[in-house]
Image (cartoon, rainbow, N blue to C red; front, top):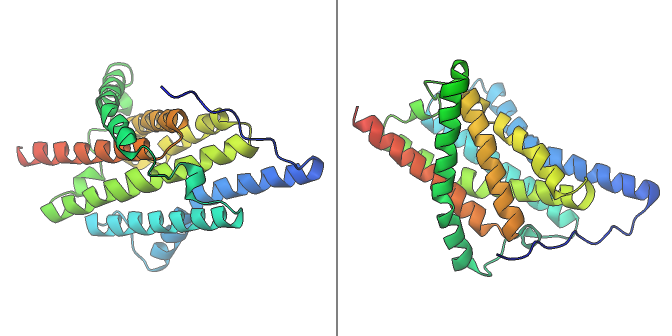
Length: 244
């Protein structure tokens, strides 16, 4: 296990300049977290469309939101004179990090099973018997769209987004652990459309992806583990659906 790196060097700014720097980082966090989704939803609403109409519409919404979020994130990094490398985007140790992402996969499914058991046992009133998103998968084409989304939106976009937010908290907003504490429930809440139990489970998984990033300080392992988890979940769902 690699030792956790120390905190970033202190900012040279003090007083009012430091306050402005922190407010700027908070503003960037809000933009990266919500602006992409807000813009795409606004465009769809203006056109009288809904992403929940079907799998193609939902995939188009997710891909558009992901692309826009990555663009916003990249612009903010460039404005600060930074790049994706500051978020851990590097080929260094790629094979080792990929193996770590693969090795944690069984633990993610174990967590999912435990969360599901707890909800069925302790809070059955919050258990969602149906998942509106998965119910959209009716054909192989729908499955292909969701698999691509799992890799691009889930594995790639959400982990780069999480890394950006955690790094901004680490530098200017109270520390990386505060960022993890703040972003974990928000990440879960963004999955509320799937039900309370699924949103809670997503938050717990997001916590583990965040811990993995903090441990490794590279994006490869969380991207691999997140993408593989989502892809495996979809394939299992499709197999069970076809066997009904």
